[in-house]
Length: 402
Image (cartoon, rainbow, N blue to C red; front, side, top):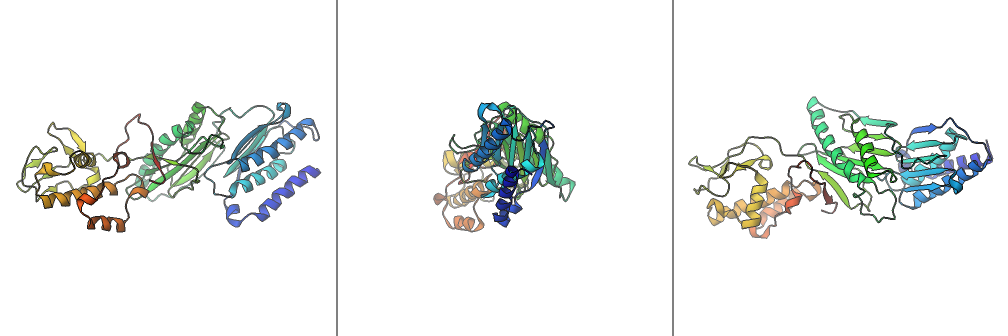
């Protein structure tokens, strides 16, 4: 073994021995590839390649997890990337291990790639950075499903989430970092599986891909994903991850792509009073509403109302318009005391169906809201509560601080 190879190996071993157990547990080698073409030891290419790999790894570790480099005279091209969903402290360890193992697995290979679950190190003797790779090189999944119904729910949630994340990442708009930070083409997201469970996702492309190639790469990976409770899939130019537990999001990421679940197809809910007359939206029938009740047994957030022109309206949207435009529910001809109670219940209900779990009040907060008068309660912003996504609409992005 050449002295230079031994030095690289020793550096990698020292890096591993000094790493924290948590970081080691997060770093697993999953794929490598060596070209059949070789270069000569001690050649000009050998010298240029070693210098370039050292520089590109250092630049990625210090520059936000992403760097590419070209050796002098364009003899060698390199890429080092730490995926943005990796925990802090993992990047330097991962790329250090990749650099050491690359020289051992692919000695004198003119082109090679070493992929870990959290990073990728790649070099070649020809330009490759802008060339998309659509071949899935590695994947692993959590297959635990309790029933066929689970698979159906996960399928809908996963498709909905990936449909939103791919264009967000390809546009490079899912990060609040400055343009000098590497690794711009990524997106984090969340969608509801059920009213109680969420699915979290992350996708990332090599920065040098065009927007179209990034989107196509991510879509090709999404088409291969099984209906499971989580997993990861990789090509050499893009990466996809989905989990039922929250995924680590670095502090510099400002926005989360939220793919809201559409409301279920349910029968129209009718609002009735004691005498059996149907009460329609807009207060067209003015009757005693002290015994007002919903005759539908479905939850209020999936109910609809019928206006005077027999148009179905999503119930929370209708209630929101009453509160925001009129400031009350007096269109029902309620007495003041009943209207105050109804308005308080409606305001609290709108907060409880926020699409982002972090925006929903805790139970202790709900109890505090019940102690307040209706006039003291604010209604949430219209764009933030549960609503159907219309075909062709743009991504809904909510700050983590919302």
